[in-house]
Image (tube, rainbow, N blue to C red):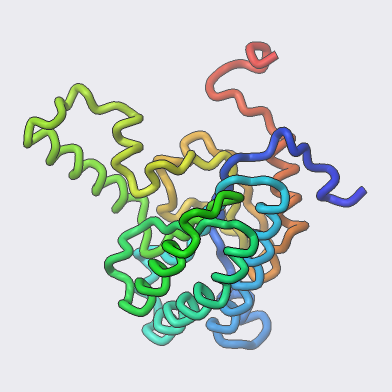
Length: 246
């Protein structure tokens, strides 16, 4: 029995988030520069996006570039920004053909002009697509996002638009850059690292975490299916007992 046929379509996670890790180490293992790994990582992005859409997953969020990634070598960052522009424009036809909407979260205003422009064009061109939403986390930091939400709500309270006592989870959710996007049920991280790296810290409070030693360029549909099968074999209790779930 192939992996895809083992998946229970009625128990799919509505939203899968992925920390795409290991491009550089994969390239090093092949005696290639790090940029070679990033370019091959684009193939994995296409595989996972198609795999999620085919199954019926409604949201896929990919951690594409963190605020900490600016600390990498200048040439690598420049190549990543150029690759993002090229990939966004190249994949636009595929996104449209497959009825996939593109969104982005993070401090997008700090991206290079060409990158920002290409991203906004793709978001606008796909805004009416309904099959699945692909979210790119770019220049993203969960701590930044939470602080920005706190500042937004504090400013509203200072102007007497809200009472501090009115602030609840729903209001805080709506102050985040991910507002309108359901929280992930499954978080996947490739490359063997077992940490969250400042990604969706508020949103993954009850997500199932799945760590795999596979480097991102080698992550394909079958690896995605394995992660979903593992997720479906877990008991999600949300503070309850197993007996209460029954």
